[in-house]
Length: 121
Image 1 (cartoon, rainbow, N blue to C red):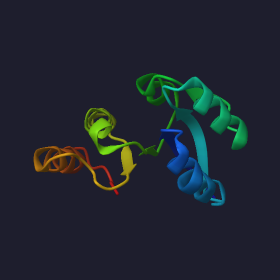
Image 2: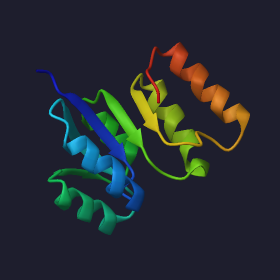
Image 3: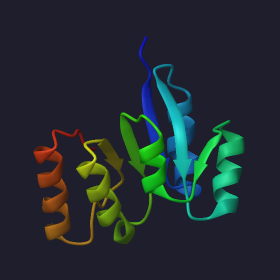
């Protein structure tokens, strides 16, 4: 069985409460690499879920790892630039709601997803 390779941006409390536990329970999913700008949160999450590849630069994470999808879990005012960059690299994206801070951002993310044949949620 081929595993879905996940890169994860965000090691905050919500991600650790909800997303990391649910993904690690799935047999067909592997969290390959994680990223957070807070080194302590990054290391605590990596240790907790046994993830060795840890980054403080998400661009480096996606360049150095073969990923199928990138989870981006952070407040909406930080999402836009990161989501667009990931979609430009033709990677599938998972984000939480709300997906942006205005309609322009949301429509633009949707357009990039369509243009690059990416699945989003």
